[in-house]
Image (cartoon, rainbow, N blue to C red; front, side):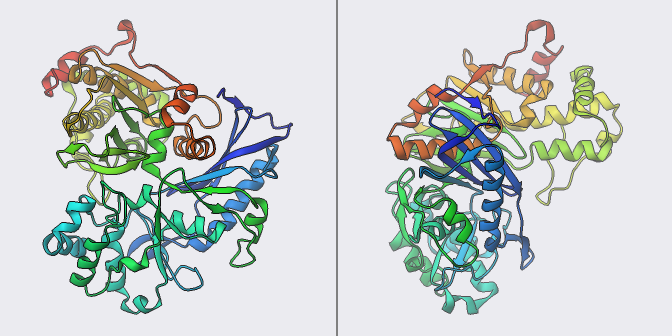
Length: 500
């Protein structure tokens, strides 16, 4: 499917829509049958704090969607002929709703890591749950839901349903309530092998937690690329405008942002690892659903496969914090020029920001000249990414197809020094491998989560496989720098840090 930028003066009929709900924005991607793409967004509204932790008021969602659809209309797009839409949601959002399908509390987001007590209790008292669902962490719904009920015990008697926030949007659009397997699989609710609700283990956990994790609260599970239902006009809670705009559209089960972003980056086979250098850094690797794993990576759905993930929580955010701390007005190009002048033999490895997001080793950086400061931060980020990639290469025990291709994507991949360190380091880890950089063009070039949601809509409509869609749509270019532009001392630097 060829890509083209939509002509703002002509009318384009959308066939596929990808809705994006990230921590920072609500966006909608549109694609026509002719392969034209468009994207518009508004800032994420209604951020909240609930018992001291980040959350969002979901009631503002329909107004944000309406505003973005209006922006797309101004670009010349129409939604009058029903097509297929899917979502990419920030992972681990928790929606607790009443009998009128309205949220009882603001939705605790992925940044809510308060449920340490519940996580420890589940691990010690109900180990069968983790054996079935995979490792449970404090931000997961299986831990976060009982934490929320510990904070406000009176909620338990008012609960009608519990789901992810993306499932709540699908339900409000269609009137059908389902639990999308994409996000549920990484929230301690589904059996990793069968992708069904881990009912037996959840019942045991519910008993251990005093009735705070009742599996009967969860809707029936639905797989990715399956249709939840058709948009029908609603006249309640602000959904009238959006449902009239999208009347008759098929709503496909939503994706967690890791699955959608990995697909949008061009991930499609077991021989590829995608490294996303965005606000956070992620290493994504697809593998067979029944693969034997070492258990160090988080496991997500990837349609019929699994998606393994290792994360550097602060990646682009780490670099932005550094620049704001030392010279906020210096342009990125000037920082890159400084990095190119650095002596890699004098680079200092800096620790990542703390769990609270605070920069560390500032005193060390303050003693360095600017070119060594920026090189130290960029090289430290690169080394953290390479360390995690080395772990990911060993994560799949069997069956393990050898990794022969890496794809770099995300805004920080445009920093030449960081890109060079990662590229050369990968070639040392996997001799003979191909290292590519995402070169997707058009309106969705840097909106990979939206593109993944579009792919899911296409898969639902056409029943084509992801690999087939990606092969015709993804764009990559070689990552290697010409020898003349390769940073002096790069090979010695990598050997010194254990890559050889």
